[in-house]
Length: 91
Image 1 (cartoon, rainbow, N blue to C red):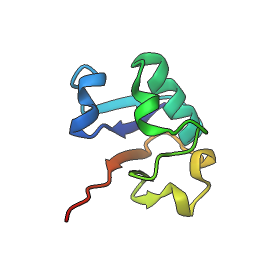
Image 2 (spheres, rainbow, N blue to C red; image 1 turned 90 degrees about the vertical axis):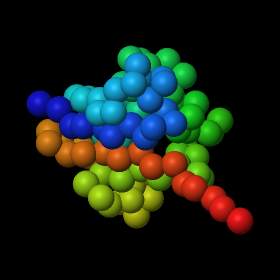
Image 3 (tube, rainbow, N blue to C red; image 1 turned 180 degrees about the horizontal axis):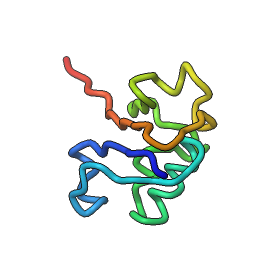
Image 4 (tube, rainbow, N blue to C red; image 1 turned 90 degrees about the horizontal axis):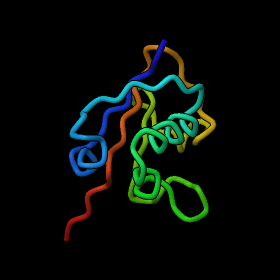
């Protein structure tokens, strides 16, 4: 049983160009830890020095922003889809 994480293009160089990575974690935080174990260096792109999701990174579980759920403690189950979406700024 696994959930799927959609990896954005800018981070795919860290995942050997994999667009979708399957994880078996129970929470979003566990999924990020599993990604870090498999793809060293990805955690620093997603989390700040305090271990919180960076301001310019949006993480969704089944299209719901984890900031409005339980953040990294948001539970995930088999079949869920986690999307990592870097914020884009313009001017």
